[in-house]
Amino acid sequence: MTESVTKTNLLGLSPAKLEAFFAELGEKRFRATQVMKWIHQLGAESFDEMTNISKALRQKLSEVAEIRPPEVVTQDISRDGTRKWVVRVDGGSCVETVLIPDGDRKTLCISSQVGCSLDCSFCSTGKQGFNRNLTAAEVIGQVYIAIKSYGPMDPNAERRVTNVVLMGMGEPLMNFDNVVDATELMLDDNAYGLSKRRVTLSTSGVVPALDRLREVSDVSLAISLHAPNDELRNELVPINKRYPISMLIESCNRYLDGLNDKRVVTVEYTLIAGVNDQPHHARELIKVLRKLPCKLNLIPFNPFPNSGYERPSEEAIQAFKQIMLNANFITTVRRTRGDEIDAACGQLVGQVMDRTRRSKKFIPVVQEEAGLETDRRV
Image (cartoon, rainbow, N blue to C red; front, side):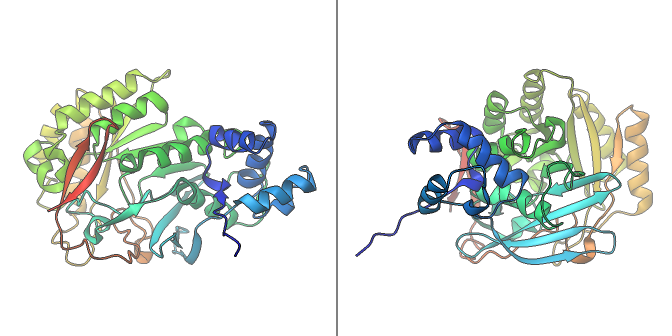
């Protein structure tokens, strides 16, 4: 009886891991660069396409490796050109990916987990519970799928994706290693070649992992703040109970200090009617953000069933924005895009097959050694 061989999915291997893979095969390390270009720049789906690699090596690769992105279940395009993909990952669950065109800028919002364990009260993703982390291949596979959706890939053509934001389903820093491997591919000139200013990781504030990130990455940083004080943020973003605002701001400053260029943190603030959108909230926010080089992105709440929250009035949005502008903060209001296909911020839900955790409350527990968090069900 022949034993089945578990094949390595080369799609998710970082540059260093791909070199190590070829070294283990007894091949020269430059083969990693060749294969990386074929996969990520030319969109190869099989090793037979790799014409500058010997037939013998292609045969060897087909026996031990594969190029396997997530399966596209659906692709929807909204009236404003926003695209949303539902992709199926191993185990049968689905996650969502959104491409937002805005002139020459094409921003891809990708997911890092199936569901999310942080349970932010205003986010529909958090309401479905947590299933698992995505693999590196499933994270970078969303970029691969989006670019290939426009037809054959051409490294010399106009970029089909100019920016990537890890702001989709899940908390990226709770899936640390796989997210770091994927971002390395986004930045590598032999893969997607994006600028570090055009790859943004958004976190709700997993401080130990954020401190660890500054040791291995220099992508741009965004934080999901959503409240100007700990009492309110504890309700909206429960992880704040472990890592309060002051601790998060200090960690962000440490991250900026480790960069070799002058950058600022993007502060995401979802405006919810009657909850955090009043003038006194704006004045509190000014005091908090004085301690952080940042720009502010106001996100009007996007309603979803049974949320219990409402979108603020346009007058309230503009009044909040003006208070921040008067205090000399760069402040923008995120336009709602793709809401009729449920692709707007806070609307991503996907389809988690394992719903057994939905009725259980999750408490973040620090894994001190790794600088990460896991979940304990109670």
